[in-house]
Amino acid sequence: MSAQSPAPLTERGQVLEERGPGPVAVTLSVNGVERSLEIEPRVSLLDALREHLDLTGAKKGCDQGTCGACTVWVDGHRVLSCLTLAMTCEGREVTTIEGLAEGDELHAVQQAFIAEDAFQCGYCTPGQIMSAAALLKEGHAGDDAEIKEWMSGNICRCAAYPHIRAAIRAVRDGA
Amino acid sequence: MRPITYSRAIDTATAIAAVSADPTSDFLAGGTTEIDLLRQNVLHPRRLVDINDLPLTQIEATPEGGLRIGSLARMSEVAAAPVVRERFPMLSQALELGASAQLRHMASMGGNLLQRVRCSYYRDAESPCNKREPGTGCSAIEGFSRGHAVLGTSEHCIATHPSDAAVALMSLDAQVHTLGPDGGERTYAFDDFFLLPVDSPHREHPMEHGELITAIEVPAAPVARHSLYLKIRDRESYEFALVSVAAALSVVDGIIADVRVSLGGVATKPWRARRVEDFLIGAAAQRSNFAQAARVELIDARATSMNAFKVELAQRAIVRALETLTGDGSESPA
Ligand SMILES: Cc1cc2nc3c(=O)[nH]c(=O)nc-3n(C[C@H](O)[C@H](O)[C@H](O)COP(=O)(O)OP(=O)(O)OC[C@H]3O[C@@H](n4cnc5c(N)ncnc54)[C@H](O)[C@@H]3O)c2cc1C
Ligand code: SF4
Ligand code: FES
Ligand code: FES
Figure 1: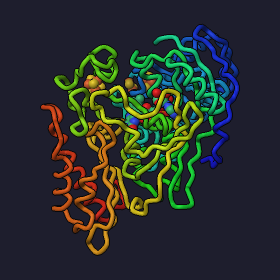
Figure 2: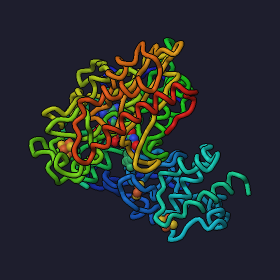
Figure 3: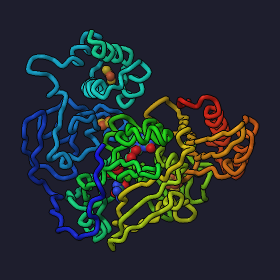
Figure 4: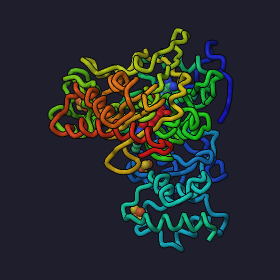
């Protein structure tokens, strides 16, 4: 919680640099690697990842913020990449499912999803895992009711919910 | 999705100057409304001015016992702030019962107040809709209106105001601080910040183009320490309200000393239930009085055949919220 005093609001600043509407050079830091790409400003972070950086882990379910399949982290917070413009992430750190493992060692949540059979078709799974790993860091995995509420932003058409909760419990309990 | 240009503002004055100079420019905060509706072809900005780097993220307790929230503070941060949880539990509950964890990390408080209606005719970018295209008519009145409003409607629009946080802030007599294109600071009482549709549903707030919300101020309200947000919806989470109640109650020797009630999900703006409050002040804190007060509030309700259930549901929700607060009131019933 930052406690900044109100900034000077009244002095007129300089003119803004306007970029686009055509393709512009953008640098994104994704999974710890600086990536350069040429995109139009209207391109979402999701499309930048999938169509320009060949990172197809994050999925496009609805493109309207209603399913969570596109969940990634920006500066460590879980967000929806479909409603995020890629250009707003310049200077921020983007983490996707591809960046979760340490080398060949899967993240604990990834391992638990396999052990607990927490997916069927797998389409929602990258979003579920990014959301679940963030949930555990946020400390909102206290009991099943809390897990349900704080995972509600990730819809699973296959209804793997009980197994997803089991995977989250397993990581929470260090099992 | 139409092409746009993008600029990132580093100071407030430049951001305001950039947007106010051009009617096709919009501020971009969390983007959870703006990008969604740009993609749906409902909003048509040609330039977006990203305001996320502006220093408007503070969440400060005021010495008088109130709260000052920067317009770019995120829903998740405000909900989690100890001062909010302690002084204004109804506000943290309203925030945490809204949207999803991901969206709450993205969405700013200023953007939350300015989110657009969820009416499906508004969102389809096609149907006649007075809010989206003034003068074309309202498709909802004779159409699918289960989620629509029963209070504050007009023959031109019956869309519900979707924000949960705004319902709590309405109960708390919040103020909206802005900075206008002329550099002047302005302050709006919360009730004045949301306009009824009347005959111009496309006008939703009194700000001029390019005016920037800088902060939301909540004055001290001891009664709010004993408050809650009750949200009733079609599914348990990640869903907008059919009916919601932001209530605070103070009872002394069985008599209601102070009470605040606002309604969400049933009105075209965050709805302060002043008739409930007027009826209850000085009355005994008992169910029959809560029910009578709720009846009085909903007397003017105008329902369609599809949303008539809300008139009854709203009354029951008011009674439930107040009964919960009369009990130990420590936990949200939602
Ligand atoms: C799937 C889904 C479910 C949701 N569920 C809920 C719910 O249950 N309850 C609820 O309350 N909300 C819900 N929301 C709405 C969400 O809370 C809002 O979209 C969000 O609060 C908007 O904030 P933002 O920062 O993303 O705004 P933006 O999208 O960036 O901006 C919204 C509008 O406000 C303008 N604007 C932004 N900041 C300022 C400022 N400081 N000054 C002047 N103008 C400004 C922008 O130009 C834009 O027109 C949901 C949204 C989605 C997508
Ligand atoms: S209710 Fe309002 S937003 Fe919906 S169609 Fe009618 S005018 Fe448009
Ligand atoms: S694709 Fe982003 S929430 Fe569905
Ligand atoms: S596993 Fe199929 S959608 Fe979740």
